[in-house]
Picture (spheres, helix red, strand yellow):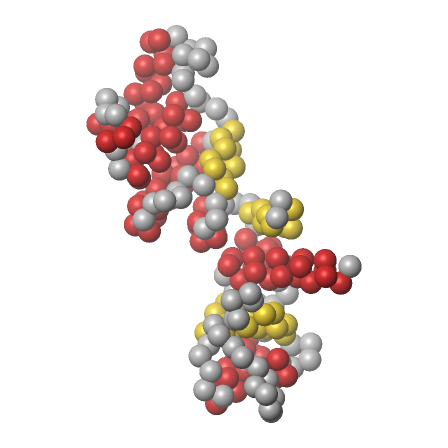
Length: 212
């Protein structure tokens, strides 16, 4: 790979050794790829890229297939890489983007719906608290959950998995929690995470398309 990029054999050998050492892979240098664990294979791919000394690096879902522990260990490797290289990283794990990215872009069906820091993306969601009801069926009689949300104090979005998501402010979240508890519904209340921000932005985009 390095010879193909124009390095001499000596330079390629030195760069490869340096890159392997940077990621703690000295012992893996002479092993066949098929004998390595999934996490080591992923690190080896990053080592290959680092050896080229490229200023800009593209990493396409580098932690896919790793178990949760290996993924978190690999995050530290990617943090170190990000200190020296401008890195584009694609991922389906929103927690991963939250942990690693300085700037986050939200893609949905090939369209970029938002690009900003995590803090500004959170602010774009308008409401800073989320109440999630995992499985909700509206009652045939009496008031449903949607009717409990005070006008101008929240937004209700239905998920495709029969969940109900309420985005609201802290005071309204506290008031709604007591009402939902009285209704004997299972729910969770949290400050919005990147998962909720993604859900909110994508859902709002879908509503706008439907309206158009």
